Image (tube, rainbow, N blue to C red; front, side, top):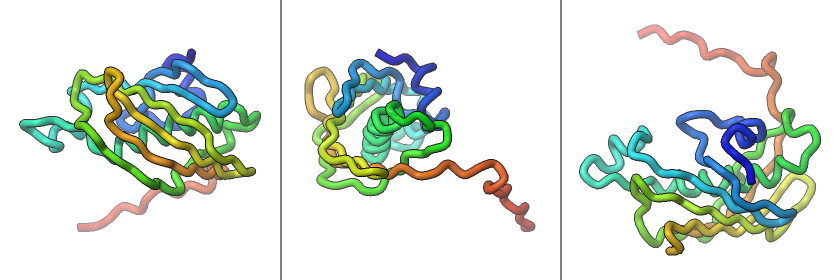
Length: 156
């Protein structure tokens, strides 16, 4: 089991883009994470005002982040690495995810090479499948602060 503080030590994401609240199970090739969906999340203001639904792309992002925990957890120099989403295949959205739902995300490793991991993901709410997808993640070097340039101010 891993709480939000331990997850924050592995993933670089922060509010509003951190989509994993807890890891329930983890083995070498499988991980189960939780995303608590709340009405305070900024995307619900516009998606949709009278019927708030979690966007499918954010469900896939939550899957990718759970997968990222599995990939990064076993890497000794993980503070120097990022896990980037490389592809999404066979995404299906079966039921809307709404505020108050607890998204249970199970990711199973199907293939792993040196810098690439492919995983089958299933997201459920109360035991009902709400989404599924195959995601591929690529391990990349994290840029140093010297490599990151601040955006130039724009004149109107």
